[in-house]
Length: 365
Image (cartoon, rainbow, N blue to C red; front, side):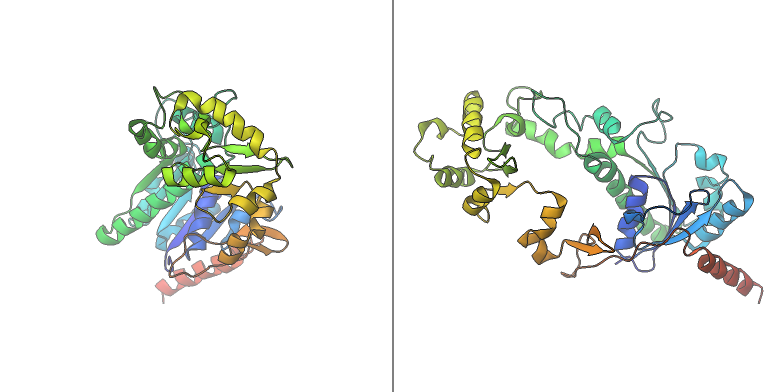
């Protein structure tokens, strides 16, 4: 779907490379400019589908290579601290002077401005300051982070991707590029808008504190340990789904469970469910509840998820070179796209530089 879009990625860590991989998965031509002193290492899954070029950006030759690469590029992605690209001589003004159409994507945790902009941080720091971490976990335990998913990917890489594609559309209409300031802080805060709206729906009871909401306290929207130490999840919010859950569990005539939204009794009912689900294994609960409208699913590891019949039917996972990977998402016209291979470090340096030399020579012919 993104055939004809050229992306130059100044390689870093975390959300920037993932965003570039996502664009490559969708058909963009992504050239990953990797640090020349980094050398070859283990295969990096987020480099799949890209072309790898090694360069030292602290040298005039390395900087000129990047400037040549962006001359016909649609997008540049960088994930350094604010000001680093400017000090390298590759800031937005310099790059867009070479290519006015260029969309300059900047991926950081705190954003390009503000008092925290120059401070170091990681995924859990950004989502804690944005407020996105606060409601994860129960009131009895510290908030738990979902390891890159909520911050680096959800609040960072995917927001950068949307911003870049919006910038490309605008550039094609106006001939002018833009600078996209994608901050994990901003994105993870924006992701809370739906949750903030649930205050009016009563999911958080009185107030908006931890442990005072449907996700932390209710018995019908929770995660439970089974007899074998594995886990299952329930999400039986709607009355018809809740009624079916009670029927499946043999509790339809138990008066304790008749008033689903009586928050004062959630603790007692949650304890009952805790004890109940520990009487059978995860597989036994799957036999009873899976593929029904109870809103149920087992908690699976990635290796287990790859073998689940639904994921197998949709071809969600695949293996290449003995490494588990996921297919491209979303899908278009119901087509499953298996992304390109992972390049060796610097594999395409000679190829890309030769193409640049040929392009430069053609100007003088």
